[in-house]
Length: 88
Image 1 (cartoon, rainbow, N blue to C red):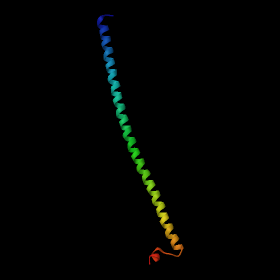
Image 2: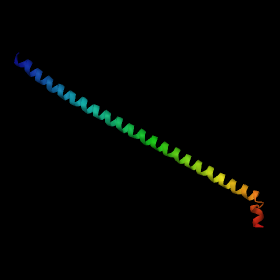
Image 3: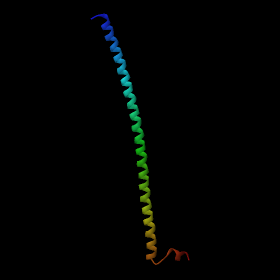
Image 4: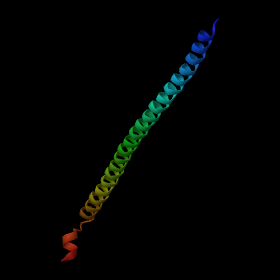
């Protein structure tokens, strides 16, 4: 082996190490972007789920309230009294 081949080999190794470092940094940057995209997707999904849950709770509350009001009116008519008659 002559001096030039040793120098070239050592330079190639340094360049190779530098290229590996750049690749590693690029991969870390891709992972950061991927993580950011995943976080945004999770937040959107969480918001949608919260809206759906609130809608379902409101629907159930409205159903029971309507059922309660209708039951009260039915009971008043069955007892022979009418709310309008009570006011008069």
